[in-house]
Image (tube, rainbow, N blue to C red; front, side):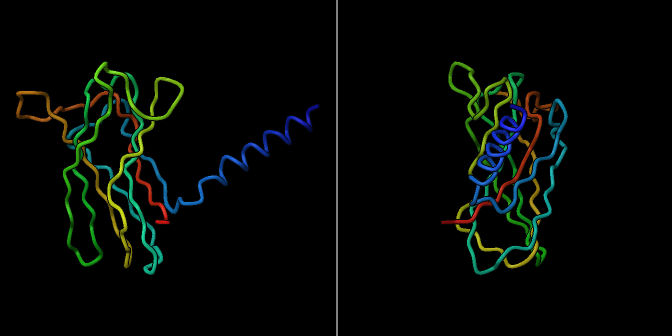
Length: 159
């Protein structure tokens, strides 16, 4: 009986990890229980095949403490020649009733947010991600963004 259960667990693990054939890079970094507005999450990307094209995603893990409908991010792609491309992005994080969007069975939801498509890398790059959420009618940003626990970056092969 033990051998049968072990074999099923092994088979399930193999199937789970082999289904993600497009993944080239996928890393998460913790921001604690709240993401400070001055905290920048940085990813040092590996050197990738310059003949191929890739799709890029920002991944987030959020819990029910996240009280906003949307999320604003400032994402910087630092190129090897010293130039930096900066994008201000907005993503919907919850339904109108406040239910968090994303995948997950517990109160933690994982969101895979599209960033760029059809990108070609020519060397090593860095990605810097910062939250830029503001409350309605207020100029200063939210100091501690509750509910976001981890920030990730993912690169997939373009099919």
